[in-house]
Length: 374
Image (cartoon, rainbow, N blue to C red):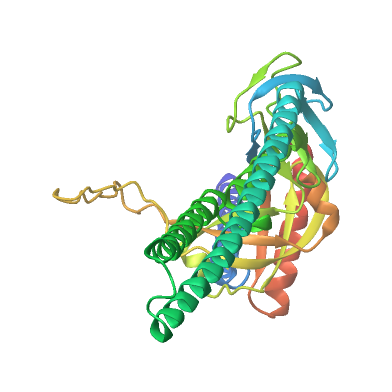
């Protein structure tokens, strides 16, 4: 009786072990099946709906530098302030440049008077030349008449009369030559008359430059944007060409998504994209691929005359190379949220395959929700 009970107990234990073994095998099979499905999905998604969390917001940033030097007399913006196009930012001391304008005006007046005087000199020299030519014409006619009289009657005129007509003609010729030289000197001194006169044009350009420098003492915002790196105040000496602040315009905002090389095999400019921003948890924005990088600096800088260094990967798998993909912002509500260097997650749709697009849309939305806990 005891032996029968022992056999029954062993049979029960064997049955339980077989049942537990079947459950473990089934669980292992399910896990392997799920892993295989995930692996297959990963292979296709990596090319048809590539996703990356290695993305940054980018803005054009440039320095605002004064075109003239001077002490700052007014600062009308604050650090991180949003400004509008042509909004007054800074004022430099105007006084030296106002004096320069007055000096240039006085110089222009002086040159104008000199040009007017030289023009008058040219006119006077021209008048003297005209008079000298008239006298030459009269002396020439007297000399010609004298010669005609001598031909008809050689003894009609005295030698003194002949000498006088010859001397008058020679003097008239000399006066004409002298007047022509005076007129040429006056013209050379004047140069081109009127507005094309070189001295006059130089004085006008000097005045325009002085007025331009005066206008440059007032610095305005080049476009809508944000002021960065403001660390000076009234009394600061601003040197010509030296940056005062950094400016981030609003009209140049994009995302740079750094994708692995195998992610971009099917990617083309114009492909639709969706992205999330860490600064806006739970929100998904739309964009599109604008361009795909064709080269990166991979850390090898071989100079001329030296042998190139070839890096070798350590371990079983080499690290994949990443290339920048520029994402154009289609959703304008995202533009004011994007900061230069801010992090983002991006997914690009390179295929119309419904299931992959559905999973990718779900993935990017889960990523947006996870921004709450990052």
